[in-house]
Length: 537
Ligand code: J2J
Image (cartoon, rainbow, N blue to C red; front, side, top):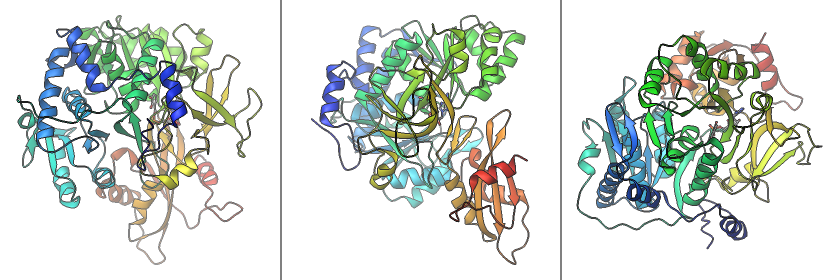
């Protein structure tokens, strides 16, 4: 069968058949996987959140009760449900319930605000939106009120905690059986968010089969087994802590997942000690903070075996500090929600671990490094990374026009990353060709921010660019041209405007500069390269 649909172009039949034959696609679903683990070891702890400890049996039961509750409310196979939860145990209860009934979680981040959430709900025609009551001092129920008033398809808002005007998750769950249509392994499991380089974020359709392979493939490479304890320090819904090998990899292996409400050493280190955490993943700025704090900590971090660092380039200098400071093995990871994930191997020589971003999970991850004309560069040369393989998507969800640009005719994904390959087959990330800003692992599409700034009545034009930053790698700078005759603006007024339009805080420009013209390229387009150089002076 070839389940490609107009919504989501999937793998051509011959590729799907090959990935099955090779044993990469095992024909499992997430709902079935949890059931198997819960049957095999019901009393083993699956998820720890503060004082709550859910066994596999309990997580399975909770997912069932919620699945029946969702089904009773008419949510079913193929329906989209925007899930915006912080690092709490309910995250797993909700997503496994949705996996079971074949409804697709759309993974929003806790930082997203009205502009992003409204877009996700509208674009996916979501039937429901799942929120916490209050998280990080922000009332998500009030955000849900505003979104629900604007999106007609949105029938339900479910709240983990005090529901206010909405419905408590606890009141959705039910013990009686409600029939539902189960998904097949080749069906979509969820929609993940792309970092994005365009005005609106793109949605990434992942299937049970392909994502499950990225999990067990990662487990083998990262040494994850039933004794592993994974600390979810980054936002749980992000692809890295979810799948590389992440919480879902560790649940696949029958290990234990520990929710960390905040990635600072003050919160994370005591949890590592208490739960004997063995593995976790961090973005480079946090890895820097941990390596500074590690040697002075009064907490016992000896259980920590592996620290994965990725999401943005980790400098060689910082990479060298990890083992001395935390006495664990560094694993660099260069991944993307669209698929391809590269890891340095645990037994790679130290020089490889600190100077490369790893090599692909699979022998069947096809890698091409090409010039601007799509011609392969000479071995060892630097160029654009294109990839195709058993867990890399063949197209974004409902984006046929965009897909023509982001994928080659023969199905390679254009990552937008500029890389070279060493003679051991490891990739080194040398730069980026896509119009995206990587702010310490948080991805920002300049166009999305520009569209919001442009809505300001005093703004004639704007260009958002990256400026180098010692701590975050990159920060954002908005160059603004005011309208003729407009009252002068202060930078804070621009930032405040962006925040009030309901954009995630990490997208609010760090710097705002007023100019009278933008540098132009030869063909009369704004030269972002020249703006970046100007910002760096
Ligand atoms: C340089 N750039 C990197 C690295 C990602 C594991 C780890 C990370 C992500 C992720 C992920 C990088 N060095 N080590 O999904 O499963 C940049 C590249 C890439 C983009 C993808 C995972 N690791 N990057 O970061 O979808 O530019 O996924 O194309 O958020 O992050 O971003 P995202």
